[in-house]
Image 1: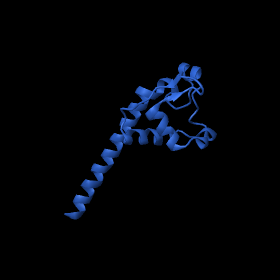
Image 2: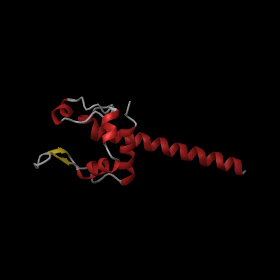
Image 3: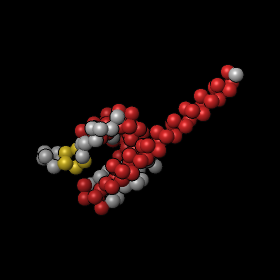
Image 4: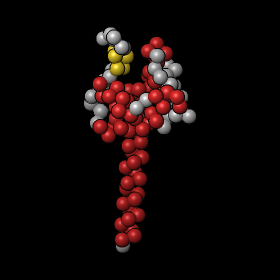
Length: 110
């Protein structure tokens, strides 16, 4: 009986994790891909205009800190020295969703 319960619990947890991965992908596709591209290369028309970083580049990834990415997602990004918005803020995302987005970005590194 214990073994059956453990198997059921493991199946439930695995299902919950894959739902979260699907949710993050949906958030990325809806909110981020229009500038950063589906694969994170920043090669969209808007991404090129705003000089979006190529998240597949290991050097770019090495220069980024998770805390800075969290702040950018939560607070948005302004051009240095101006009020021009480069990336809008996403204050409605939960902390778990933001952490999942950071993890998703990290997984783009080649």
